[in-house]
Length: 329
Image (cartoon, rainbow, N blue to C red; front, side, top):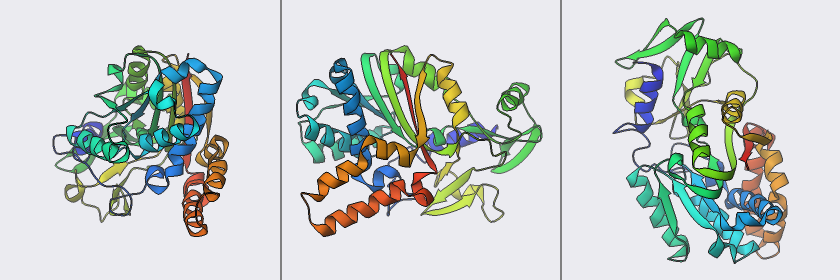
């Protein structure tokens, strides 16, 4: 089978890695910005609030997270929006795009633990189910989990019995690769359809997403497996695919040129693309930390400051991760 199908089954199949709820953070296979600090979500909410102040109609729209995992991010955003303007939790509606029933149950359990019955969440199976006038979509690390094809020197990867084989590549795939000046690496499958589905049912929207990757084409493989905070390149001689298939996460660096093109070709406009560090600072994460310092102990402040350092330090998450804001109005 093509590698993209193999990866799709690995992550989203009947027994796929994302079929059930998997812990993130210290007890899981990897960390994310969401699991690192609650101020990640607060800063995005702070940015959303500036958009609401600019266009008041947005306060009657939807806040929707795509791929919410346990629900930390949307809850952190709701909490900060309530701090800024308590009336927003009554005018805004809240949703999560998540098709896995087991994951939905974990999300609702966590959200009830945070807010009781004060906040109601609507679940959508996919973005094309969202039919609203306005939505602020937010996502963290979803595009690195789209299935991809692997190419090198005019060939593409197939998988037979968990063994990768190289065969003549599909001509359309090579044409696409040539357009993006790529001769070796990963080519994501599904960005274009995702963008089209998002815009079909929503009259106007903002979409803010974070992921790791670059605009520049590396022409090398970044695809890798994460298990218990250890990283294994897919082509590591010591890695046996049959041992990690559907038991560990598999991911790759996002080609942001491809991602941006996919959305613009479907009617979106680009607001901004920048490093996570620049985005979070622009969104107000330092100001939020300073406000927190005024109402907590020095020990708590230093603990949270250290977490934020992880988010914005160039050598940790700050430069490797990028923020992309696209919109359609």
